[in-house]
Amino acid sequence: MLPMTSQPRYACDAAARRSFAVNGMTLRALEWGRPGRPALCFLHGGSAHSHWFDAVVPSFVDRFHIISLDQRGHGQSDWAPDARYGTEQFASDLVGVMDHLDWERMVVVGHSMGGIVISKAAELVPQRIAHLVYLAAVALRDGESLAQVQGPIVRALLAGMAAGRGDGTFLFPAELAWARWMGDIPRDQPALGAALASLTPQALRAFVEPAPLPRFWSLETPRTYVRCLRDAAVTPDRAAMFASRLGVTPIDLDTAHDPMLSAPDELARVLDRIPA
Image 1 (cartoon, rainbow, N blue to C red):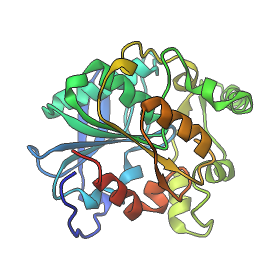
Image 2 (image 1 turned 90 degrees about the horizontal axis):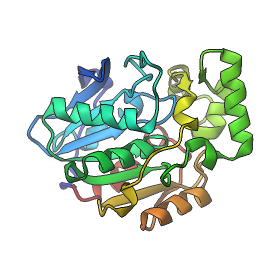
Image 3 (image 1 turned 45 degrees about the vertical axis):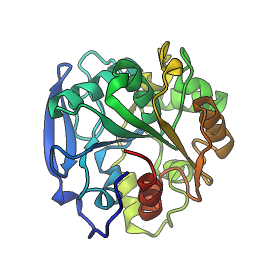
């Protein structure tokens, strides 16, 4: 990326709130930086939202035009009226936001479940993706689902939680969410409580529907994998498998699943080494 500069911390209220009419829904996003600069998109994972990257953005805001998107059914964005939460729909939404912004090319950082979405977006518009960054993310083969790579215990847990809610969504209890995603953040840290309280119920369909990726694995789109060595969700061995699939050596961070919350400066330094 462009040379890193010293930048004061931006609170989330420094962002512009954007709304985009895409695929019959209103999608919300946070925006920083001037149009015309290189484009950088942050894409959250399951149950998260656009504010997940608030502490990372300041390192890039003076050099990039940045969007952090609330994906459909997350944060302030609409839930899909047709209850469609497949990889194709999430990726189509992302491309639609690119169109609204007149972005010809972008670097996109996909966290966790967001990795599946950025793979599909690259398949849809390969010429418009400058670099794919998989951050503790999942890289599925054609026809695989996120639930398949989670293992039978997690699959049963997700199905049980969704059945209990009765609306096709699940939400991890706070203690389990902390242990799975944020175990490197002390329990008494106020930011932890705020993050846990803001989690969004997650559509189960996004986890169980197969991801159609018939062309992605033949693409030569530049890519990077960032592995988190204390990750209980995408464990280090599983992350190594995903990085191997992508044909790259992972860059390691000594964090749990959400380094943008626990170690934003370290994550920013890693991202800054990636070509724009």
